[in-house]
Length: 307
Ligand SMILES: C[S@@+](CC[C@H](N)C(=O)[O-])C[C@H]1O[C@@H](n2cnc3c(N)ncnc32)[C@H](O)[C@@H]1O
Image (cartoon, rainbow, N blue to C red; front, side):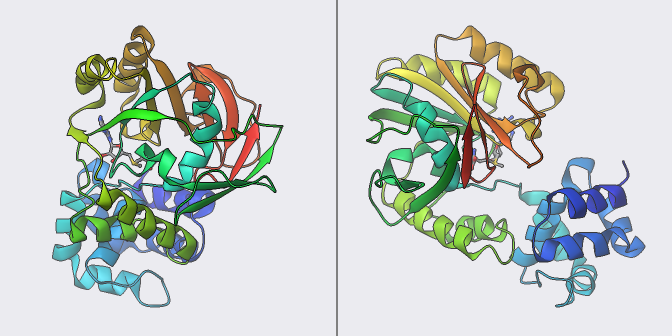
């Protein structure tokens, strides 16, 4: 697939709101495609370019002149593309995580792999509303989730005795530039997500999570050895696997399954093909415990279909 095809496919299959039209327009702009093609291959992805232009102060939509601005300011845009990564951190995913976490006997020692700023490492600091059930938890961030299939929604939040994250490039929640980068990764028009991100970052900034810089597979065993002293070790990852090559993904899965830990994966249905989940017509993640699919879930946690 060439770069124009990547942007065209993104427009049709993934993008929502103004990014749909914008990605299609980029795909049809040979001048901008040539600039993108001069970037290293992993840096050509739509989300990274779109966020980088906004981070540099450019517009977010085709109507506001995104393409002209991007070409006119290409050295700045290129600098951000080359130095930043797509590290979208979505606290909403904790609504997918909670019913599965509740199946594990605590107290829990939680390790998130690919944690970004660690917003999914604090599932006990959010308030959850599943359908018309009574809310669980409290705080300024409410995660609303519509369910199907009678999920075992817990009455209370899990007891988390210890937590840490691993990331190739941990995001420092106390750094305004890093926080702004995370905001630029939220798509235009998604104000509810942006507001939730700000509030979740504020919670994290009060009590910053421990984030270890390192590669998923290389760093995990050491952290698991440490976590064992604190509770039932749960290794969790969400939207991590697209960033691993197929070989690295297989090595990571082999490692997790060889460790004495509980394993929760929350990834696109294509990323762990051996999980064999029914193909739905919605773009979905599959949330699995110890390699057994438990739910199809919205990639941002707004719905959950218990299997
Ligand atoms: C899309 S973000 C997801 C963040 C968070 N898990 C969530 O669901 O909101 C993926 C994260 O994985 C990290 N990552 C990518 N490859 C990695 C690797 N080999 N080892 C550790 N972290 C990695 C990236 O830096 C990024 O922060």
